Length: 248
Length: 392
Image (cartoon, rainbow over all chains, first blue to last red; front, top):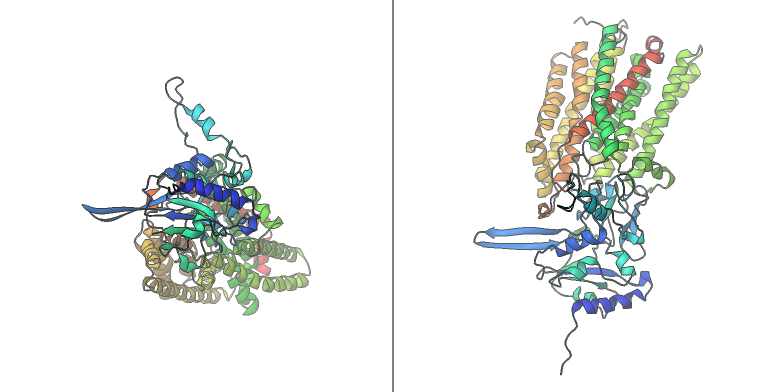
């Protein structure tokens, strides 16, 4: 009797453990998004917001929507758009203080304590993958009605909960301290990868449309997928060599 | 045409300028306090248009600051326009007057203004922005030393050596100024993500625009402050007017050709940017400020009354003031033109696709300009400018 194929999440998880045994410079994290499977549920966006405690205006993983045709012949298509983690990123050389760079994993990261908040990297990114943390909170102007609604205090406690991006514990306790006033971006959930977990968007995708793994592992799912004939990358003509691939 | 001497030292003139400075400072103070209290929560720029009014005014002030000194130094020290010595101190004082609010605005635009020191302690010299910051600081030092030399020469009984040093320093600062303008232009021109900006000629355009705005400022300064008793006053004012007119027309034609290239480049994003400038929500800045008050009115005035010094002064003032619209249009349109399809699926604070400056942004600009005017008035009254005007 033929063995039932593994769920892709289980397979990717096993591949992740294998990749983590290698030296960082020997692995090549890539993400593959199957646009045919994306239903536009935005679960990945929400998972990312919850994982990284993202404030209003900061989005690491938007899902762009496009409507084509005229009623009744209308089609809706979706494009999840994390940071492309380009191998030739246009956003890093423009930083005047080396606050953003490709780390040993090949992921474009931010040094929040070094960033001066000039936003030159947002300007330079051809994929609009970076957003600025303006210091807003979701509970601004929320009323406090104890015993009636979840008021500002409770909501505020949640918003001040620590985020563990880049392995550092940070709480948004005031308007002065980072990451407020910094540019922020997707980092493939490096803090989760370090603990052997897949990025939040990948595990949350209800249609199994997002794949993640080490493209240097010839037996990995992503290595297989990126050699498909129906694979494409955004704005490839710019020569940025994105590490996010789309199946169309 | 007989002209009446404009003397700021007349008490009513001084009172007027002091009142304007106080109005700017008073009107802008709450905006400045708001900026420190609420950070970037009350601004109109966002993640799709990350650079707004403050960056545009910064660029404009850099054009004025460097352009005026380039024009003054070239005419006075290279082409030996002797009569310009009357405004030597004022030219440097005005440049410093524009530099101070420029640095203030760009500092307040940063998410972490107090980390500005990171650009000094750990600069990435592969970044045009790092170069801009360093060049601007070097330029600031040049300017302060030049201003100090002017004051010292004015107080000295034997100012020849100081004036010689001033000349050497002025000439040395020329390439620094050009490099600063080129670097600021390169910050925008090197962006492959912004098709409207991306062109190798953008730094050159910045140089042209700086010269136009700078010639307007130098001409206005000369007409207002140079002693009219000098024989060469009217002739020099006329020549400066002609120079301003020539540069103005050259700059306008360069802009027109640049716009036509963008419209006909078969790159929709570039054409979108031009459409945004001429027909977008901020079109008044292009039509009323730049084309109307910045090009047409001064061109007509300078063409019809080339020898009327007062008219030359008004036209030159219109040129340098209304040129604020140029960087605003270039910078905002360049960011709104390249929006990814479907990006409007995400809305919320900071994710808006367009841009309109908020009251807080205008207030901060007003405060910065008030600081500039206050520096000018303080320098004008406390430094021995008057003696300098007479003796050079």
